[in-house]
Image (tube, rainbow, N blue to C red; front, side, top):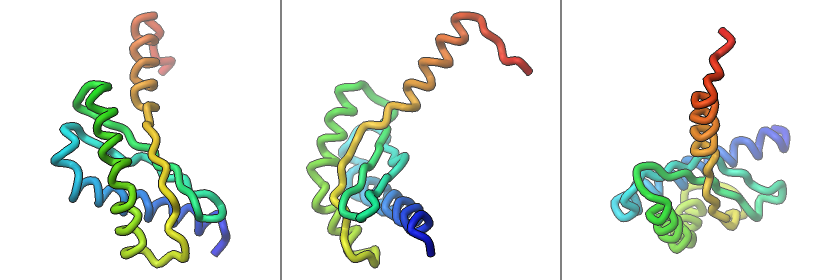
Amino acid sequence: MSDVERTRRVNELLRREISEFIERNLAHELKCLATVNTVKVAPDMHDAQVYISFFGGTPNLYKNAMRKIVRNRGKIQAQINKNMKIRNTPKLDFRLDDSIEKGDKIIRLIEELGIEDAE
């Protein structure tokens, strides 16, 4: 298996493990919907950036939800270590993924300008 393929598989497995942990252990506390969109593990597998988006709340609620997730980083990493057969459990760096909000804003601006689809 190539390094690229291995990294892709680890990214997806990490995304699933983190999503499951949040759903099972934190969802009731967050008061909004959290979605793990992307995980990008470093080539040395020591660090991973975890991009999360939130729905159904206010920006302040999203900040609080992110804080709760970050506070549970150790528990999340422990679950990953228990469930995945990898040499090193990457240190997780949680980041807000606002790409969906940005996309919605662009669509609204296009609609306001009256630009129609070319089809």
